[in-house]
Image 1 (tube, rainbow, N blue to C red):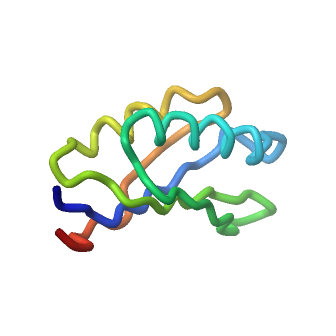
Image 2 (image 1 turned 45 degrees about the vertical axis):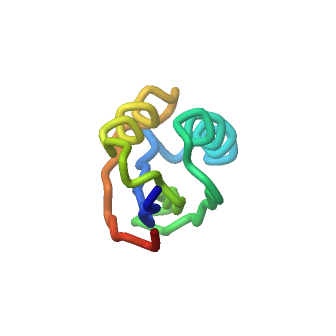
Length: 90
């Protein structure tokens, strides 16, 4: 099975949204969808707002819409977008 390196950007609803809570929920969802080695990086946007960058090894046979749709239902998330997708190995 081929593996792809997938990076997604999660934008929170506002400044008061806890990125730690989003990380916990996102990790549960990504693991349930078959993602491996999921990590998170906080990226400053503007005026104190931070985006959450999700980096993971994604099964190439799986549709990336599953990841986008799965993460977008988390409370406190306003938008999810794929920012990078490339074949890693396999």
